[in-house]
Amino acid sequence: MEHPAFTLAALCSIGGVLGYGRKKSIPSLLGGLGTGALFGIAGYLLKENKEYGIHVALAASVLLTGASLPRAIRLRKPVPIGLSVLGLTAGAYYSKKYSDYYL
Image (cartoon, rainbow, N blue to C red; front, side, top):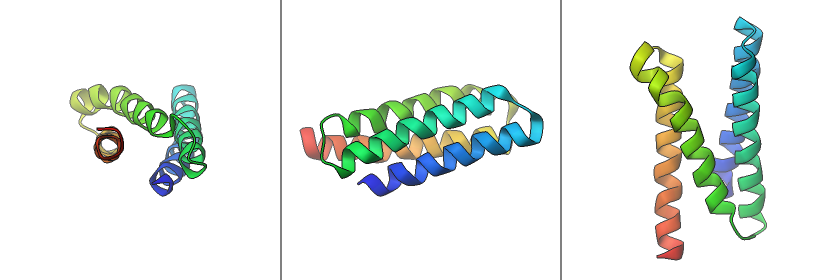
């Protein structure tokens, strides 16, 4: 269950750095690294079977979706759409895992 979190941590972090490198976008850098850090923390917590790992993963998914979905709808560009799909997919995955484990 931690593998998707670590993968998303890497993707978000790399994306933030690339966004900064391409367009000098500080929000992309901070958003990518921040979301990547949250997914990394979630992956660590899940790997160690600690409390709240799945909650952190869900929060990071909601953050990623909430930040990218309005831009995807308004701009209709590939990067915000891809981030929205990634966030929604991660949210669905961790929601399913949450319901399997807690409900």
